Length: 277
Length: 260
Image (cartoon, rainbow over all chains, first blue to last red; front, side, top):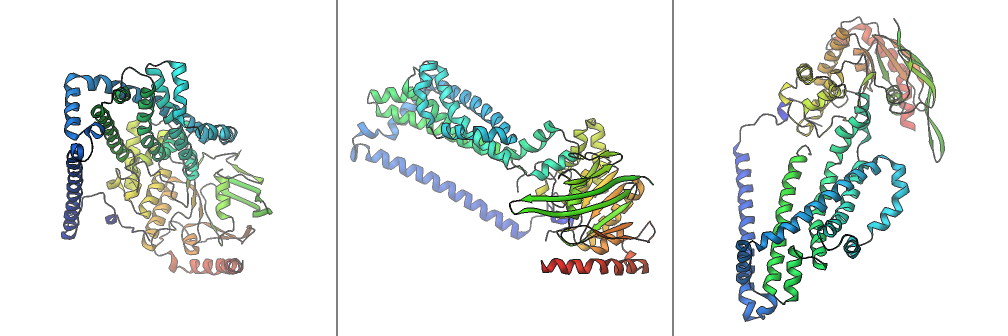
């Protein structure tokens, strides 16, 4: 049974009791403990890597953390890092925006019109089961080795994830909300704006979150195959020259960029879905 | 008094794999302006179905429902509907939820704010204007839905077990509030409930539905004059008489329902 009186709700800040304070203290302690263990693990991994490089394995294959961070520093101050990273980020961002935009609009359309969805279903499934990366050579043929082919690869990857998630999100909307708002006077655009899109947000965000790393992957793979600039190009070129340190540095940059983008999305998700129980 | 809602020969049949099932059979009913009508009956008797047909949410299989001279086809935008299930939008704050119908009608912002504020005061949720529905109890969410329905001032209100989830005391408070609004704003109310005493306490006419297939079995005029005091109405002899008579009609239906 639901509590009925207003004091059950949390609109006013209640006074902190000792039990609450103790609970919060325990939570804080736990958070710090986790953070401490994370740092400790990272440091011991780096120490082990540094030690084994030269002692256990030839540095030619595994390089070493010191060499990698030195390289990263070099790249940063020489502008080489930004010169390549900006290209990768730009292609990823553009591909993400195009893929997500088209995926979102088509997802809503297909979700709203069941007939359209039923007609196109086998085709969507067929294209979806293709590894999108296999499209990269085609895109390079069509768009050349410049920016456009990378944008196309990441857009193709992102499109499907966002499309399918938006589609499911729209199909999941509770019809009660649609009827209730229609009786209140909503026209179809009102229903779309105030019911369908907010309700599908959770799904759309999941699609976006999953697809961001893939957008990065799509771009980098495009750059592997043919490019003259970008982190993927740097890695491919370094591996051709057996420059392990640069390969690791490139990978490190990708890992950091991916984590930062994910952290940003998580913040956005927390704000957009603050209404969720 | 003029008929606000005129229900003629309305039936609801569901077509499934096993053939047709009749949910509601040949209903004829006229609801006059300013009436407060309650539907009671065992579960599955089609009382909610009839309400859903008046609101246009579900299709009428045969027959017609005419509201103010206009036949109902598709969603009915001339009523306010308080559904049984929670229809408050969880992604909007309380005040944004209440403002929703005004937003749809293009009411200017300043007026919107003022009317929402007045409504929140009416349902005593003014301190929760910025809360999301998840922060409210079930009863508070019901009050948000009530405010949302009243804010655009529909003349006809449809209510499907609106106070079913509330505790006994709050239920009485809400009933009193509803009666006050009904009298001061001259609304027509169609009210579905499974609570016989609630029906007698608020309604001017109680319609008893029989179990499946649902049809109107009995109509009882409640002779208790308005304004009524919902807290004391139960002790009046007229209440007792009405209860007695309605229970006699209802009890066999409920027993029959148990056997199904």
